Amino acid sequence: MENNNTLAKVALAVSGVLMILVIILFTKLSGINTTEISTIPIENSKDSNKVEIVNPPKTNIAFFNMDSLGSKLELFKEIESSIEEANKKAERKMKNKQAEITAWEKKWASKGKLLSTEEQQYMKEAQQMQQDAMEFERRVQMELAKEQDDLMLTYATRVSNHCKKFGEENGYDAIMAYTFGQNVWYYNPNLDITNQLAKQMNAAFAESTGKVEGKTEK
Image (spheres, rainbow, N blue to C red):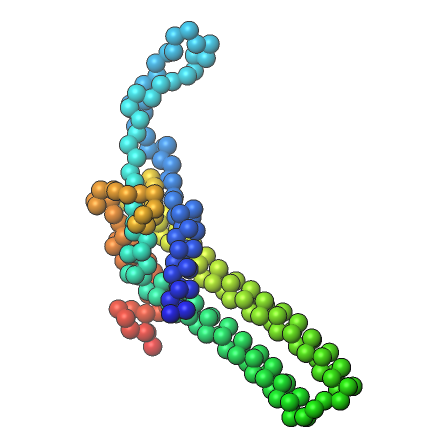
């Protein structure tokens, strides 16, 4: 359950990153038909170079469903597995540290009633042990957060790059991420490129991992 909650938070974080990285604008000024732009002098204007765009060029926009895309991608499945493994690794580190503390406590408990000089040493070690444990936990959490951030950035970068490639190859001026309940509430289903984008990304991921049709090349 704890891993599922972590993955849900990661998915939301990835969505937030992609809302910035994946909105790709492709300017096609060189492809604009000059007949669509009519130069009309503006009366009483000191600037005779001003023009008025009578028929602005059409913009081709596509959308993809963020949640649906993730469920279709082998890349995202591997990132999920990597996040789970990172969590387990952090848990193992904390359990090992707890085992050290338990062993230290047993060592002192086996002595029976402590003498005054021993009590001083015990308190000194206990204080140091507590500081070390707090620092260790902070370090483990930072390492885990960095690993998760790196994985999220990898996912966001891959999706962004493939959106750019897909847009350039198919003549889209912008490709936008869509998540239910956020920003976009409706778009024409014909503008949805989720499946095509997933197919392109899965093919690229299969090539980079040496897998073809679910089999690993020997």
